[in-house]
Length: 474
Image (tube, rainbow, N blue to C red; front, side, top):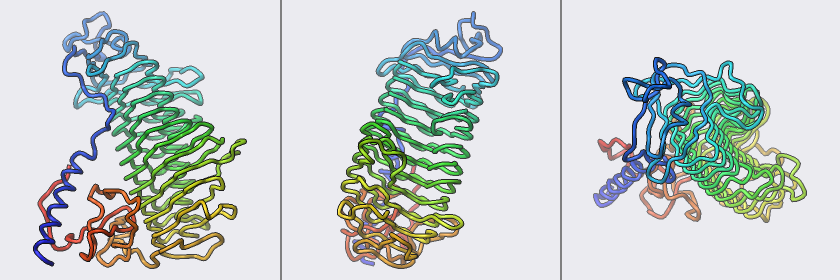
């Protein structure tokens, strides 16, 4: 290896480190903590007649929700609070109102014995408010009706729901409806949708949203769903597993749903459905959706489906400008059926499937439904590992055929080995500028050219086995 190329590799690695240090910011629309404002406290030994100080705290969170002003913060001390919380006051730009668990303590909002309204309703519910942060709470046992959520945001703007933990919610753990500029970041949603109608983490009819670094597990509906007129959103760096329905779902329903990026997510072990799915269940146009740098493995049916779910309505299943690029779909399909990518949409325009790795999926790697018009699809530069020859299965143009040679497939390490045929085999057009790990793309796997990208979610650094740097990426 020439010294100039080593130094180029070092420089690119440093660029990646800088990139990764900023990649995981909780979102362009996160409401930042206030620079000034009063600080109040709630504790189980408090009294709502108190002034809300550390020594004389309030007793209920709702007292704070009725008393705070723009810029204020309330810290909730350890313990279980059996109440419903409805904030009554908004913050303002630069002066959000913050509801937060006291640092190092577990504050639990428990809906046991509380009957929420038989409608869209939350145990912690923000309706028609703005500039509010909810941080670090544990919200449990929300019900008993079909649309009862743990944390619900409706008709609100500039809201951050961050580092909370929901458990046993009849419907969504976190639901966002009809809002704008919302960040849902770093939450854990467990056992949601046990008897409800909505998804575990729902974003519906909401503009300018970011859903990232959340863990969704053991849920009874879809894991994360952007739907019903959602727009200008990002869904990234989430892990979804052990849900009963689709892991990450984007569905137009009956409204124009558009400009949504789904990237750097891991979806695995979905119990009774697909890893990812795109749909227009009631005829709304799904437009400009980018799905890239994702991993889907060991899901019951398909890694990703571009679907004809639902009756479609009078407009059919309209989709336009759908890009599925540089993802890795491995070992999907249990028992007798399942595969890598299923393209079943019959009403799509400009559906692009490019630079993906489809490896050892059970029944097919890449398959088209019987009525899908091929002239509306661009299928190229995908790695096909395990072609089964089943009905509708195809290679596509410029396919790479053979073992993907992952670093450790059995251990779900789907980085590329040094001899992978996926290295330098991709098309540059539409390829994401970074990979799953945030490394720049391309990095040039074999040293012949800096213009070639690798297939799948991971780019293989050409110096990875020669150069080791004592860097910790943040």
